[in-house]
Amino acid sequence: MPSSSVNSQWAQNGVTVAGNHEWSDSGNQLQLPECLFVNDDQTLVIADFGNHRIIKWKVGDKSGQVVAGDSCKGIQFCQLKWPTDVLIDKETDSLIICDQGNRRVVQLPCQSETSQGEILIDNITCRGLAMDHHRYLYVSDCKKHEVRRYQIGDKNGTLVAGSNGKGVGLNQLNFPSYLFVDQQQNVYISDKENHRVMKWNKDAK
Image (tube, rainbow, N blue to C red):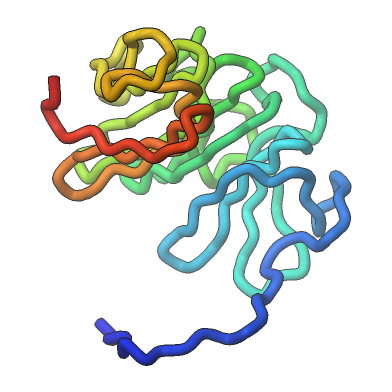
């Protein structure tokens, strides 16, 4: 693994790798991109929130490929509504999508151009997703102000954080959004309306 010197310096300007400063539903532009996942080959998988779709963008390409949704919000299985997060389950080569506007988490094959897939969790105002190395799925619910952990196929999940009503207490959250899970299964939560980042240790009570 290459090391990084304490004196390392980065370029003064960034490089646009997907979209540009204008928005549309064309294949080379985005609208309010919300979150992204970077695959092992550096391909970006982007939750294109305003276009109600997931778009895959390979390194160096001028446009992306729509892999879920059709730029028209809807509740049909082939449609998304305000997707906020996406990740790739490498074991099944599938997309797991936080379809916030439809209040569900869906799973779709990465390589399929059909609408086949399944609803993993429904009736949830999901905002963020994360998966640990044991393939447990973590989902934030910004309406219930909680984070739950699910085994794939489990509809109920196990409470990880929050669920004590919204508030500023250390046992509370207020609009939990994006998540990160470390190797010890500790969960980091962007607690949006509390203007803080929270860490919930594994098995914390």
